[in-house]
Image (cartoon, rainbow, N blue to C red; front, side, top):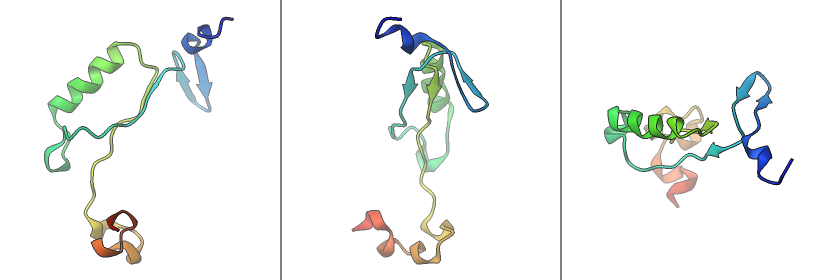
Amino acid sequence: MSSTESLFAPITLGTLELPNRIAMAPMTRGFSPNNVPNELMVEYYRRRAAGGVGLIITEGTCCPVYTSPNPRYRTRARMPSAA
């Protein structure tokens, strides 16, 4: 198998069967106004899937600080990324 052929070979990860080993990392592009996914976001990922990406890791959306399971991070000032 050549150095690039393995990228296009199917792979099984636990119970997940992928058609190839090409993965798209999550990217935050601001397609979810007010953190609610919409049709623009659906179309964006639909095009990537149609292009043959084996695994797509979707972007995250923001959750209000007060939803943290850890009471230590329920105020913005104490969030690690708010430094």
